[in-house]
Image 1 (cartoon, rainbow, N blue to C red):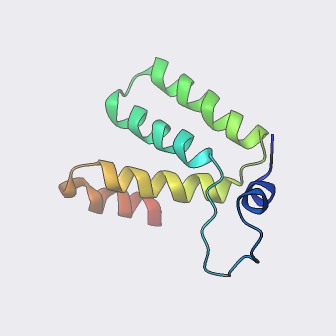
Image 2 (image 1 turned 90 degrees about the vertical axis):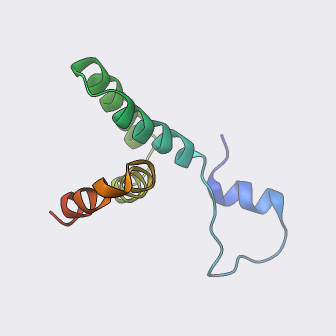
Length: 92
């Protein structure tokens, strides 16, 4: 499996700009976790999400990246009236 930097190099031979956003592939996994959180809140779902989060961390995805991406995805997926609640939990 290629690292994000190797993938970026393979796609372009230009130097990286400071403002470039490199997708790592983990974003889709985190988005699916957010969708599953919203779709079903059950002990079974909790264990499934926990396994997915552990898998991300086993593959050295930084917890800060997971958390920020998950908060951003949940904020974009929930009803607008719930966004303030997500923001409050994020601050805590």
